[in-house]
Length: 218
Image 1 (cartoon, one colour):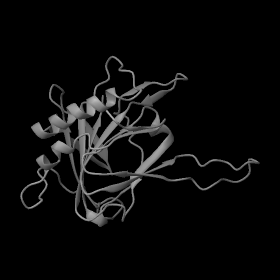
Image 2: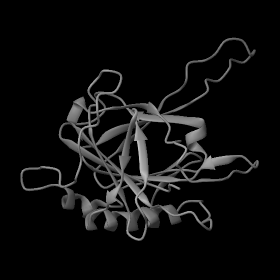
Image 3: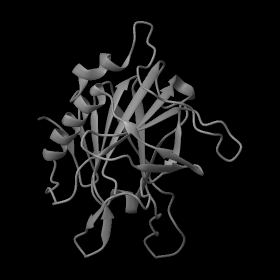
């Protein structure tokens, strides 16, 4: 499978393009059970969210903005995309580890150019962690699949680099990756401990964007 791979992420263009129309109705309404989260820090959250567990796995919990979500069973359409997510993960350098399996889906639905998600890391305590190369525990890989409107996915180091003489700090360099309809993005093991990611306001094209993020949770 053709893909763009580096030490942090792997992008698989159009990996799930055949599934895109499964999530949009005749009038472009979203065919997912989602709702808008409660206001965060007094502000309306500019997207809608859903949380599901995959077949063969019990319900899980997901915390966001002081709110705890309980997963619902994933739809047949989400289950089909989960197969694609597992396939693209197998195409990366990730070596399957006993006990590690993608078992939940977080759905985010963004309404065009107003949609956004702030800088963050998917490092909740409930995330399944694996042993890193130096013996440290790291969040395992996460697979994100995009449908609908395209967007620019932003990534930047959590820690800013020091300058050449060790005084002061450089501005953190932001890397942006274009995600289009049907693209699958793998955030590799250890990325959540070292990088923040997000989507800035104005970085989504006109129209509705759906993001399905497949994770391994305890």
